[in-house]
Length: 117
Image (cartoon, rainbow, N blue to C red; front, side):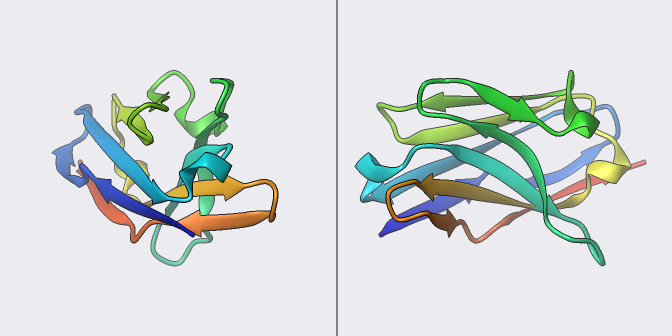
């Protein structure tokens, strides 16, 4: 089992920045990719960014050039630096960890990000 604890959400004005953190514990040796998803009211959960253990990354088109995902394997922590935030970035952001051996996804509890116009 893997447990994920997120932090760093909050309220920010448009154009501002926030940094989200997610620390994994438990059977972390089995985790490969870690990432961030978000879900706005009335919408489906969507991928924001993902980073593999080796460092390769993938971003949603809507956040490219504004968000940066990074990972500290020694601390079992993944970060999401969010710059130039827009009101449409408002959502609950969820940390995700993928365990390839069992094809299992783990989720954090979610952290609210609200961007005011």
